[in-house]
Image 1 (cartoon, rainbow, N blue to C red):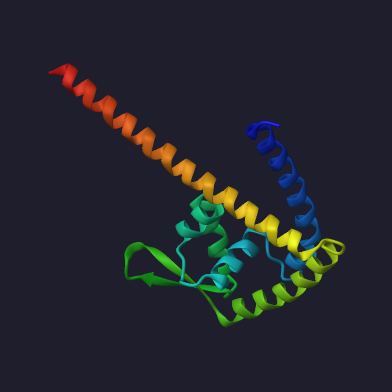
Image 2: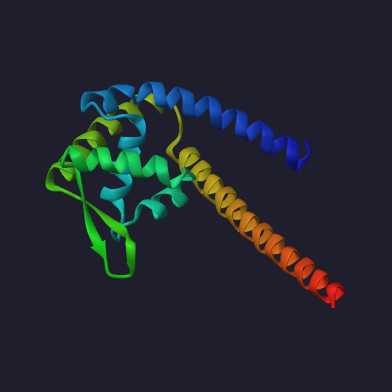
Amino acid sequence: MSRSLAMIALLDELARTRGRTSAAFQSVRSAEGLAEMEAIVLAAVVRARHAPTVSQIGRSLGHPRQVIQRAADSLQQRDLIRFEDNPEHKRARLLLPTGAGRAMQQDRDRQGLAVADRLTRGIDPQVLADTTAGLRLIRETMERNLREDEEERIDDDGDRGAAAAAAAD
């Protein structure tokens, strides 16, 4: 199987797995009345080592900033996160969890572990760990390739611009 066909097969399995896990974890999300994106953003804020910005979460998750901002605004209105001025950026505020947000995420994590335990019955934990490592490698490689493609595109645009300017002289 070619690398391209293997990637398409992987994407199909990921889509199917995501659908199954989304349905299985719906009870965890709905218990607190959070929309899926709100739950994702809350988890990202609570689990962050350093207070993230909306844009950082969006880039990390592959979602537009506006989608993350709507979820963050909703979480802030529910007193689950708060915004704080960012000393490193004038407009990009930092997102921090409130006590209520941390407590909700801890409760969601407990419930999520129970769901995960039911879903993974019969799967060797090493298979899960190896698959996680493999997916991380794939994601990191794809991110690097995308950055290189973007840098190459920018270089190509710059070279074309320089060539056009030279031709105009």
